[in-house]
Image (cartoon, rainbow, N blue to C red; front, top):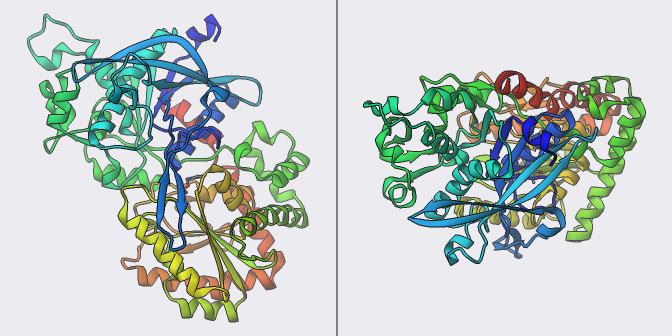
Length: 564
Ligand SMILES: *Cc1c(COP(=O)(O)O)cnc(C)c1O
């Protein structure tokens, strides 16, 4: 980085995971992919921002599935030297009275006009550190609560120190991507201490810290909000501020990372309009805005669609709004581009599974983290009904993928259940479950299927972004009205809804009936018999949704609403 660059950059974005490249295995799912897409758009738009994350040297995990769908988790080694440069900078944090030294690796995100975003990966795997401390930047979401707390000390406290040591003197905003990074606010607060004040709350300049901090929360699921038992906190942290100002840090006898971020941030947001509402209900008394998520279009466009947009909408790569002009692309060319993407996917699936899928059959895609509320098995609820639809409305094939978190027993059971249904339905309905869902597969599947299905139990999906990748590639969504789809769905125009936004179905049975009904009476018949209508929906998905649900629009909102 050049000298003036250190002066110019004013925003620091902190994230536990980041998905910048399929080979840099430092992400687990939506949160990391969003962070990566955000940084790419920041580079495209030349936003003066830097990012901080953990090295996660052994990644999240690689998924192996046996015959019965039992998941095994294999550590991943990714070639960090190929992507990152080690900087001549070290800082340290104190954990449990020990000095833990941190070194820093730099990755440069390059934007389309040549502007860059530096990303700093914190690494404790140094000889001078104790054996345990050396492992603290190994596994993303690995280990127990103690491991996680130590990691969050590295990220939050170590991160603030690292960017100063690198040379950034003018950071004015600290953006916490999820509560994992909240301890950065503790570090900033510690620095405001004035000894001549009696009242503890006046000893520290809360307002100045609040003016610097921004917090984005990403899930309405309670388990997604980190909390730590106070004995662990006492043991790990050198600072006693959480105990001196419990109102800011502690709830229900635990240090609550979301609470810290809420109390110490001036700007707080959820990641879709509905998620903003849900978050306001979860945390009454706080001012909470919403900025709907997006995707980095250049990353997620299949080669055939990239070519098509380059041909008909020159300049779209630096102006994502201009995808609205996709309404002028001849439908037949959209169809041809889709066939190309579909062929690539079907070849990939057949090569991996030997299942013998067909290019001409209506193909449904469902890929996301395997966890109970996402209800991956909903489509397979009634096997007879599914076969009946397949026979009467038109043939279908289904592609699944998704990892379960190593500690999510329910998620693992779900994969096994799908495996057993797959065996029962084969060969009447061909279904594949791909092993080791990652960004590469995400890109292939979202572009190559004919219909993208998402049916979480509302209101637990904060936003979701995979459906946006589908839209970009002209693939219509069929989804529960939750997260971003409440904003993106225009029935029969951009895709279809399961249930209604006003009156959410309270039991899965109703959702299953809706899902089958739409497939049988509307979607499959349109796919096979009304090609022109189908292509119109594809084109609307691009023009109405991809032009809006992207990180260029999203980053512009962050700049205007949060950073400036
Ligand atoms: C896009 C993506 C996600 C996020 O998708 P959801 O809609 O939240 O399921 C997760 N994992 C991977 C690998 C992705 O590419």
